[in-house]
Image (cartoon, rainbow over all chains, first blue to last red; front, top):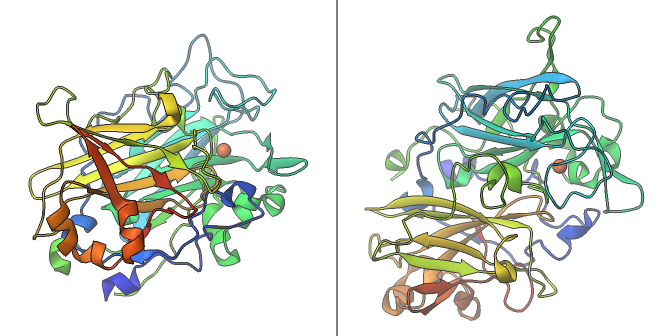
Length: 234
Length: 177
Ligand SMILES: [Fe+2]
């Protein structure tokens, strides 16, 4: 029963093939998926609690300083990681990466003619606490052009990678900012069915905004599934 | 209990994951939490699992990230590797060979992420030298016979080769988990 209730929700996830996002055409699997029975070994996953995180891993404004503070608008990005029942997922790894304030990635492949920031690498990670809560400090990423179609620009976004309790809850996604005029033109965002789109847009959070310091954005993440352990399922 | 929330939708990992998810492999100054050694390469029973990821034109994909998940009754492990640094754009892991659980054929789970995938793909790596267990395996038997071989890594010494074909005549079997 759980397997039906908590299967991947196709009404919110993007399809594999979405031709407006051109590189899906040769990279999306084309044949029907084989449905796996969710047995013990498939449901289990490695334990990530052991990874040693650095002191500033969650603070992208500090974790790669060379000779000063990174440029751009400092922000807080925070929220909870929950399952579909709304229960917190504690102690799970959250990894993020993003462009700098000018819309440039540190990645060597990024050839966009915008400046790199010597004091900003643009990646960080943290673990949720016992209430499923996480918090990052970072710089608001800039928009950047890409080659999908003429005059294509990615909206401001932060990439997220999450694990949750097992292999079925693995999630890689992107967080967008409210009111971004580029969202309506972005085939990666538009690939998400309408019902799912609000779920990848953060909300501005005045309560968590730090006076004289940083605006805050709230981004809650809902991973597939419930709390049932594989042993209870069997 | 009732579902209260909708799942957060998946989005592509994009082309620029390397300095965040596999930084040391790509030479960035940030500590990798996890790399491609599920076991030390010097371990006497270490095997190598490697291969390419190919697109619908049969071109090798140089910007994919693969994760290897291993769990049996005795071992568990997790590794991550990008296809952008090795010659031939292969991924490569050092691991112990998984063991059979409940008389099923041993396997690794492999997750493939890349630009051009809005959602990641799950597959499994079975082993060519486990013929009798493979023949009786309930998951393999669920798969049409002419596609089963896409899940079986070939063996040369302690090296298992497993190419992932996203599309085409040899399209790898992917799973809904
Ligand atoms: Fe991006």
